[in-house]
Structure formats: C-alpha cells, structure tokens
Image (cartoon, rainbow over the protein chains, first blue to last red):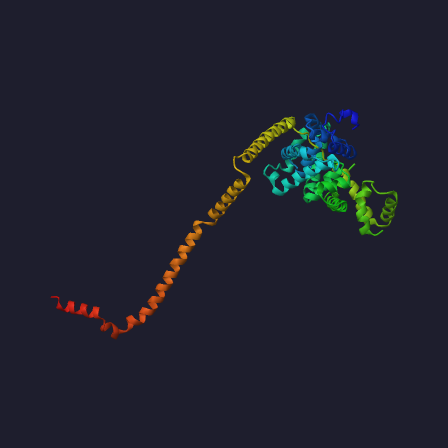
Length: 218
Length: 168
C-alpha cells in the first residue's frame, strides 16, 4: 500500500524520536502492514481496525482449514487478534506483518490441536456441508452437481485432516495463504529446507489418498 | 540429477519457483524418470484438487465480539496493574517486604511439608515396633512357662493351692 493512502505522518504516530523513526524506516522496508502496526503501537485504534478488516477472513479460513470446525476457528481467530492487540506495545517490525500474524495463528492452532480443544466441539465432517451456507462462493449448480462437489470436498478435507499437524499447516499456508517458503518457515519456526520436506511428504500423502479423484478432475 | 535430489525440487518446480537452470535440470530428469514424472504430475493434480475446498465467511458479530474481549482484557489488565502498584506502594520498605515474602514462603513450605499421612505412618511404625518387642518377650517367656519344676516352686501358685484346699 502506498504511504499516502494511510496518511502516515511522523507527528501523528509519535515516531519523531530516534528509535521510533528507526522502527518506522524498518517498517517501510519490511512491508506496509508493519507500518500500520506501528501506528497501532502509537495508539491509533483505527489502524488496528484496518488490519483486522484486511486479515480477518484469511486468518479465520486458515484456522478453519487447520481445525476443520467453523465455530472453533472463529474462537481461535479471536484469540489471534487479541494477542496481536496485546503485543502492540512490544511490536518490532523484524519480519513482514503477515509472517508475524501467521506465526501467532499457527501457534494458536497447533496448541489447540495439541490440547484437543477443538475435539469437544468437533463437527463431524459429514455435517460440514451445512457450513456451505456461509461459504464464499455462491454457484447455482444442479442437485447432482452439488452432491458430487460436496463428496469431493469432503474427501479432500479428510485427506488434509489425516496429515500430521505441521504438514497440514505447511500445506495450508502454502496453498491457501500464499506464503513463500521463507514465511512458512518463520511461521512454523523451522528452516526453509524443512518446509520443503514437510510439503513434499504432505503432497506425497495427499497424492496417494486422492489418487482416485485426480484422473476424473476437469 | 538423481531421484533423491529431484525430490527436493518437486515442490518449487510445481510452484514455478525454480531458477531456469534448475528447472531445466529437473525437466531433464523427469523426461528420463517416469516415477518422478508421475509424482510431479500427481502433485500438480493434488494442488488443483485443493482448489475445490472453499473457505467460510466469519460471523457478522466477529468484530463486535473481539471489541468486547479487548475491552474486558483492558479492564483486567487495569485491575492487575492496580494490584501491582498497590503492592509496590505498601508503607513497607523493600527489605521488609522481601523478608515478609520469604516468611510467607517458609511458612507455606512448612505447612505443605507437614501432612497427616506422615503422622499416621509414624504412629503405625511405633505400633509395629511395639508388637515386635512383645513377640520377643513372649518368646523369652514360653520356655519359662513350660518349665513345670519352676512353676511348682513359684510362691504365688503355692499360696493359691493352699487357699483352695482350705476352702470348705
């Protein structure tokens, strides 16, 4: 985002001091959302609202694909943004804001999966079709087409759900959140080569599990 | 390029993130190795299948709920900060406060260290020791009680037998 769009002024953001200005310059280098986060750090609540609006849906969907339960995903997303808000005072833009955000989200998701928090409210995969009502797309296919699409989606979700947590996170960050290997590595707190290895193993498992669907896809 | 080496390149190959020279090397390997070629094709197909997984839309109350949680968080943070400052502003000097804290911790350790189960086990042990010593004493007495000569000359028993004879 261009600087002008956010009406950034050093005076407004209490960044006229030496370290503040250094933070600001680092933020400019690291990416525009980091700049906005620095405004949040400076006490600008509307900047937090901007970040929330921009990242809410992707974060909710990342968590949804991780835990495969819409209600739990929302609860976890609340936790993520609450953590972001709490951490505003100590925020230092050392990486892209998105990387930092997904690192928090991944931590929250993996903790939830480890503690089995989502299991209490787990929606059976068969019932997930009901969540389609809140789906993003709104196609108008026939009943048969709908049924086929739902069955395929169910199988895909099952295949992804069968992956180990870290492989699942790597695949989702790679496929749906569009993070590069470096960002995924930082989010998962591992090396880039480890990320490529996680992705290779995950895609290999998915290839085997979804082999019967691959040929018929158009 | 061998299969093992090619495996490390298949994901970036699918993502088209390889440098032209690396891509050419992988292409060369895939033309020669049907197994790796099949795997690379499979990865691309899986990626296509994953496109079918639609996302969801957050509830319309998401922002309002978050706002409420942030407010609650601020209230509890304010309460904790108040408690902290109240403790810091106690009319005690720091050494006195530290001493008091040490005393409280010491007391807690003593109280936790003392438990009824320990007392019970002590009482039980004393009882066991007493039973054991009684058994030893009985062992010493049995040979004496079995010695008829000794018992016959025992003064108390002699008196008892006289009394029973003198009774009408």
